[in-house]
Image (cartoon, rainbow, N blue to C red):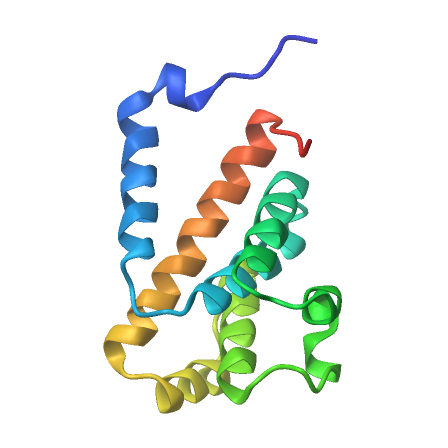
Length: 144
């Protein structure tokens, strides 16, 4: 089987655009733990082992607990997440599984909890990790 392309070598300008979006995301008001919850949950839904591995390690560095990481795939049944985190996770799931659309209920709940700028930052974080997931899966990046 032919090895898969390395996007950053074949299309460095396009890859750099995605890196720049990630740099913007690093400057937002969204907390480091919220960012990692978004990244882990979207990566779980997309089946991206490379990104799950990276972002669970990053979450631990920011002080996330093992319990909350382990329960993330069943967050609705776990009492360890705040109302804001639950809204972020619901939005993450609906944007990641976009063919089902983002429901008014989920969007309005997030809009109730966050101002427009914070909500925009959350949405961009979700879109960015979904792009990274698709890049990693398509090009065959593997967790080490």
